[in-house]
Length: 410
Image (cartoon, rainbow, N blue to C red):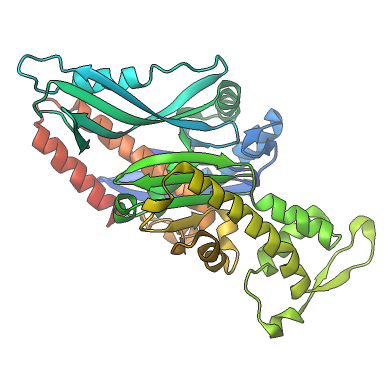
């Protein structure tokens, strides 16, 4: 029996580590294991205590492995943090073949040239994503192979990270027993699980609001155009609650998840919530209105800062599909409505797509990145398979890509 292929995604969050295992059976994805544990050793998406991070990763992976019934040894991992920076680059070459027919090698050359940018010694490129190709000044071309032209240009989106932060992720995962197949920017991974092709074409802003960061990605005309990591997230809301109602941080997190809301009725305002005191002091009671008055200003601040960054990106006017919010903070009741008022855009909460297997478990915004990593790995596997197939024609390649895309989304 041939060895069954498996894809593993590990979401390294500030407040939780999530591991998802999927089987690839007859070109169909099936989630067979999910593990989630509190995250220790990470702050704002960056590892600050290696040993604690390794232990958290190991627990999440072991939980997923027990559920799946087998061990895994390789994964796709998410990366975030305020050290992430992105730029859009441009390059131009003359086509190499006589007659000006663009080849795969021409694509490789123009992408290599676009990536030849001056980077500080402490940074590295983690993604170089083609936005569009330009053949003899004709824009908007997604795949120019086989076309005629004497001049080929490329616009690409380059994402860079601090070398030390990326290396610490590799080290932590390797110590936990996992080889890293690829590091994937978290909002890019989340886009695979919560965005639809028509949204990416029309123009959409994806916000992945996690515990320590808010990850922003803007898509337009079928391609990613802008990415940014904002160092604000759900842990700031929890911290405000802990200080505001004078309760331990862990209990503040429980209170947020259970009672926090951004829409409150007159009847709900008077409802009381019992919270433990600090350092063994007596339990106290607060009203839902008090909790609302703490949570609402912080959420509005995060959204207003994000809105400023969207406007600064230069793509605010092309977001016809509005915004999609995912991540753990997306669970807050009423978040979409508040975001619509601040962004002046239609907003929805991003739930991961159904991909088979343990669907009920993963249909939650907290698993958006983990599921996205699985889908990213699945697409990479299919691309490698196409490249290895000998004698395949360009129309067969396009047909296969379309079929894979259709299966992925429908």
